[in-house]
Image 1 (cartoon, rainbow, N blue to C red):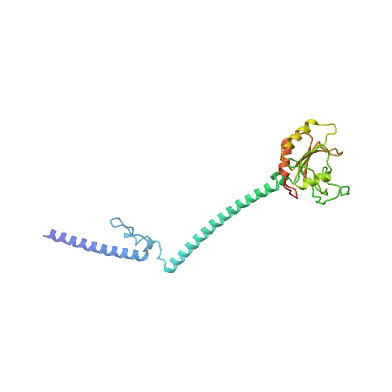
Image 2: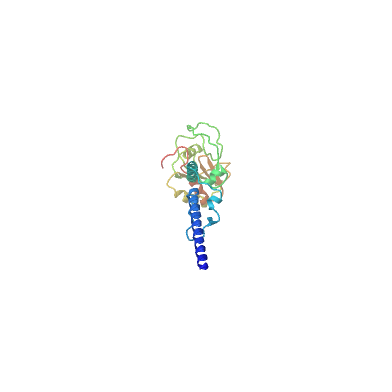
Length: 264
């Protein structure tokens, strides 16, 4: 009988303890929800961490943010997002303008002649040597004028008429050929006092491949340093041995680039 009463007392004590624990658990859950409504509560059936601590939120000292704090946080996030988008937009624009600028540089280089000529600024080579522009004044035959700054000339006073394009067997006046240069032409001259039929033949074949704006003529003129000279408006090149690649490069660089363009 005593044993029965002892068991009953233990059962009652266990029930009281369980009820106390449930009450304590309910208070902890309610407190956790009130303090940290954005945090998920422990799953029932698992050992909750707040059995010995009120909860991660409470124990870490975090507090539920106020409406003002949440509003400020959203504003900060919006500003950050807008700044990031603005930075990406600026980067895209910078890349776009960089590409446009690069294309513009290439187009300018192509319009002004090969890039090597732009860099050299008149250094000797396939594009020749540049000379200062001496103007485009027209003069009458027999009129005197200031001396040219190169031999053959590349600019300056000239006659009102120009020579036909193609091959000439006789020497032509400088004042007439300069007018051809003004029209964007290229003049090829050869100076062979002792004769150079092979070179002349090669030059004729090359000049014959151009429809217009290229002229070949002899130059029996003392003081010319080279056997073959190439002139365009503001440019001169000279050498002794026939070089088809060099001649075609000069023509390509300067043909149709005179100050007064005239249709072929």
